[in-house]
Length: 283
Ligand code: NAP
Image (cartoon, rainbow, N blue to C red; front, top):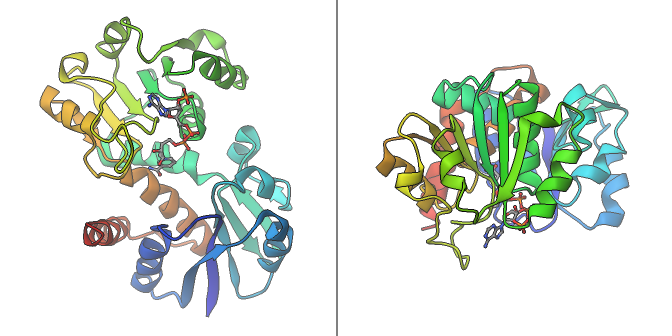
């Protein structure tokens, strides 16, 4: 039996075992995906255990994505650029790190909404870890412009300074700036990468944009996946825009990880279906 799993802290609600084990079963691969929760001082030892012959590798989540980056033998190009990994692949005892948050995000845009980011104008709400992965992917796809709107403007400034590309593609503003309508209405893609709209939070029923601020011919992606249809996605539907649920970002980072571990095509729809059923069963 092959072993694979997820490294992190506070993983009791992780959906990854739910959809990864369905994928292994569907592809008839004898592997078990487990949750591996431990403290920071165990990380080095845990990473080294991935070199065993029956280990496929692991996913890595918060707070170990940057630390694990320094513990693998090799890195793929995107991981090198972003400085963090969420996937480790065991190649006969040699460990290679990848960032499928970035590749999965772009793949979800292309496969779920047939959206090609090249040459497009993007508005991204948020400047945290999720925004960073999305922006890396979009910059690599050569978008025309990216506006980063964040509550804390300085954080957005710091984030874009990390990108070694032509800074002219970026603009920054406060998420509460009135000019946001002018920008949102000219956007081809709007992404919420803040926690606004998240279930069980104080902003559960809030959307940073109302229907009149969303053009009908754009794609709106909410990275928040609980609830499946967030207040922003409801506003987008009302505006007649196409929506992508945050669950797809989660699924596609897993799809890319699965394909790296196994070399087989992941059963995307089965993984999504299973994750959604599990989600609904939680109420
Ligand atoms: P993070 O690094 O903590 O960043 C949080 C972001 O939300 C920051 O931009 C923050 O603004 C903003 N924010 C928080 N409360 C706000 C409020 N009341 N009003 C306006 N902005 C607010 O978190 P993260 O890792 O980027 O995650 C962000 C969201 O994405 C979370 O809901 C997370 O669950 C979700 N996520 C989803 C996936 C997926 O696979 N779908 C993957 C990763 C994360 P400030 O900078 O001003 O604090």
